Length: 196
Image 1 (cartoon, rainbow, N blue to C red):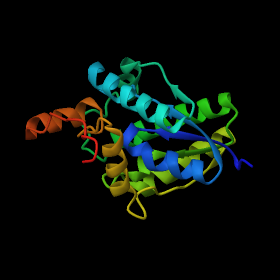
Image 2 (image 1 turned 180 degrees about the horizontal axis):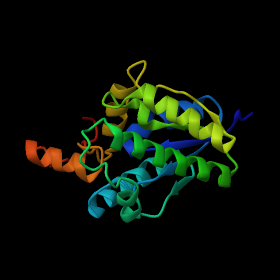
Image 3 (image 1 turned 90 degrees about the vertical axis):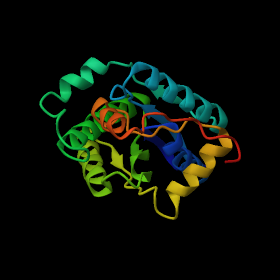
């Protein structure tokens, strides 16, 4: 028996490996939602979406990918592009993604929403949980406040990503985070090899 329909907001395939597996094992009927318009450049967006298709095919769950519209993301981030990583720009970006996921959840008939963002050791989990709760309250959904990085979730995601050969990026996706990596010489990302 299913526990209900859960919309999983997915920031990237590697971070979704553990949530997809655990939610399915708990009896949730999972649908994935990928926003992606925050990701730059377009080639990077395509690499991440391709990796998500690999995960979707492996784990057999429906996936909704929002249209890639970076101009919409830039419009919503106007005045915030110079903010430091982890600041007001990130809050606005999380909110934008969670709002889009909530709308998709309502349209898909999912009554619950959670996010893969909380698996990252680099993200502000209390902020994500607060925003998710606020968004779900506005949209009449139930927010599932999962913290996926607990119980070594991040390390397990690294292992599962390697087993599936998923592309694993080295920046969150937005142009300001890419620019920061370029300055530090960390722009190249490579897929993990199977068994790594």
